[in-house]
Length: 182
Image (cartoon, rainbow, N blue to C red):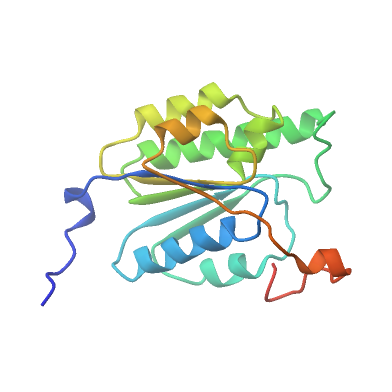
């Protein structure tokens, strides 16, 4: 027989990174979120660079107790070679919201969705993300998602998973599908 989970304030929060060119980084984070909510954890999700696109997870997550969701970015795609100042400002706001959530004492799990891309493209500094990890309270779990995770973030992580694309429907011309891909 297994014992009941420890109260969130009694456990050590870790740092998880989901990265790589394969599908499933945000989906993996959503799986952890679902599991955490099943144990009454308080969860904050910060979406970088996702704008107000109608992602299915946003609709359901905002209807659940113990979840705070904040979405930042424009609807248009960010040019990685020449990001607009507005994209940088939105990413700075997202990182600020993430920092506030991590340090607030209100959350057990904070997910910074697509922060790896935002830092790789220079929208926010990797050093700022590193500092956030270093400053996190002991019990807070942090998940960083997105392609291009910096080596420093991977080194700081307790868990790092790289999704590798072997085959993808896009290769056959199949576009992203509502309810399954977003």
